Length: 357
Image (cartoon, rainbow, N blue to C red; front, top):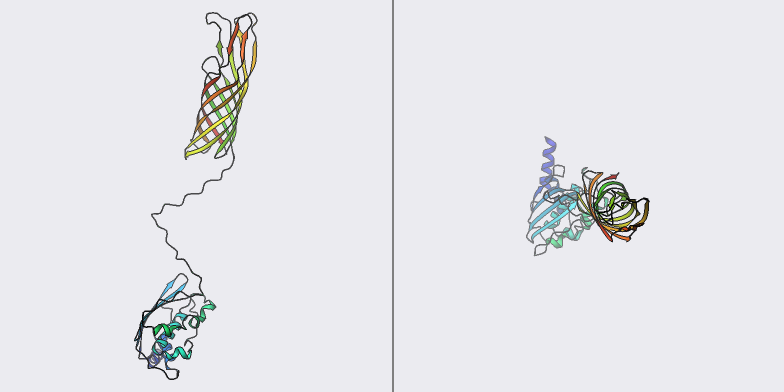
């Protein structure tokens, strides 16, 4: 019990009667009595002739921040009100600064005498001290008397100039929408499509067929190589007479499509390409029946809608306009012309597309 009583008594004896300090700080900071005793030792040093000491009331609050500690100091003296804000990584540095400010406010002659801090700046062990911060009382606090003697309220001092400015970290607003997920990489994919085709105009009458297409696709375009065959249709110059020809069409095509994603589950493509093949005519109803082939060449354009139903499977629906670039003509000996390809045709295509991978 003797040592604590001796320390408190010494602090009370050394504390100047003209300084009233309220010290609010974390438990690991120097106590209020140590700060008051340091200020008392500074005031008690002989500094030459000067004005009488003034009554000073001070309130110091030390709080923790992400980068260290902050001191908010409020001084009431005959010169007026003075507010200051200081920052450091160690509480001891802030305690030293408070002691010197209190001493110079109580006895302004100390500023002219250049009195150093009473307590050596030591780390409190909580944050590593920056060596540059240990000179804070000399570099930052030296103009303190001029501020304390100002008749008007002095502005708060800026943060320690030795520390880089730190932008406060704003908490995330729970009402803000979540950040959009990054788009998956646009890697090339292979495609295999099997489709049923309804055709009006390529043969003498409406017909149907099957089409197979192999392609390479990316998110914005697709290139396909296709093959198709159509159910034969009969052509007769005179419906009342038997001579005629059975017409069939086999084609190979290449086309390119530009793709736009309307929704996550919907794709719209604009396609165009060329179709080449053979238009076959097999004669019937005559003594010399034979089969002949004529070249077929046409341009194919139209839109296509794709609905992905799984990661690797999509259902496609397309409508094509077929413009004949070559119009084959079939003639039966002794009968005359049997069939000439139409200038244009219409097709509807419904298929299932497999996408790999």
